[in-house]
Length: 519
Image (cartoon, rainbow, N blue to C red; front, side):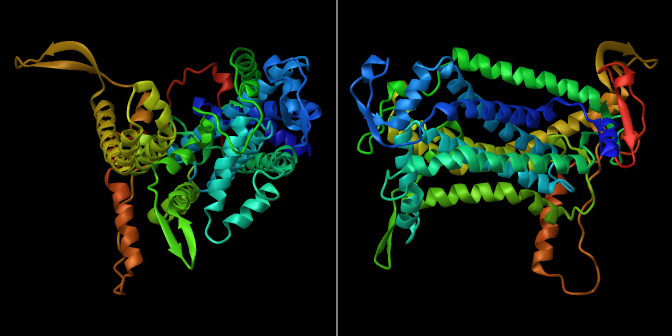
């Protein structure tokens, strides 16, 4: 135990702003847990109906569930109850956003490569479980907004061929709406938080067992770590925790979110106009809006493709996100550990795929608000839907091609800057009468950012005299596609791994480099 603590104190942590997204996600989870415990004490998970007789006059005399009645009591009768509710809600949104940004950071910098592919799956699992926790939590107030969301969920579940109705009864405890509070409450309060805690622990163990990933720089190699000591990193982490708590409190105190008193009790026969899904689930609703109204009769049963197709499409998208590290590793034949992160421009194909995925997600996300856009901008809803359908097909390939060309252009500009230096604006006359502009060489640290990356290794077919399988040929073609846009700097341009360079991030005593085990 003493040795483990000593190793932890001697561990070095890289210092980069993009590494903070994971910390923000964890700190937001802590805020969600603390506020959730406070709310759990006052909340009553029951669908038994009572007549509201609280301080909010517009709802007096209205029949509602005890769940909504207790939530209104938390908001209007418990001291600081509304603040706790809103901080809980805002912190959960911060957590979802931070996990998404953390996944994007891992993707575009290659942080998912060996030996961190399992960590990628854990972070992806964190996102899915967090979305489930948010969905189950949204249903607990039992107001009109949550009831409308559950009605959409019921329709999606029932669209599953042959077993949809049985799944709906299992989910809601009978015919919709059933006793959904009794089903979702233990999931939201006990099961899903426990899974999140377990996933955070697994992620922390994996991070401590492996050498931290870092961006290329002077003195940084695949076998060492340059960064801050553990004590300094812990102090910075404590400061970031205080900042996250402060932001959540500020948002909860100044920005109203989920005003359930304006929606009233849930009613399966009604729906509020102008409502929409939570932003993190909007892409699912957008897929439902863009799907054509197709139906197929098979074995005497009607299969609604208008609902089933979006579910399959979104599920396939999420599965591809989860398994992408393994697909890329198979294509390029990545077998060794990769501890140096890449700049997105140094891998144009991967960056293009990522931007194409963002455009795909963004079009679905924007389509969820097509009706609101039509009202605000006085447009036709059908025209907007057709526009989003076209963008969903054309947008991702166009984004891939454009991003790929931009990355290649940025690589060329970086290499040009590394070779010739920075333009000074000073024109010098040569002895032969010609004029040239003087250039100032870049410093060692910036030179590493511009040209200090691992050169691409083109994939080749082995000449063994044996028949090469079509799968092997496909793999080589894809690997060549990955490598062909990665410009390789010449030996005179690429800096030495041990090139010293001034790192102006603080006193030199706070910047440490540790080789060997990376602890």
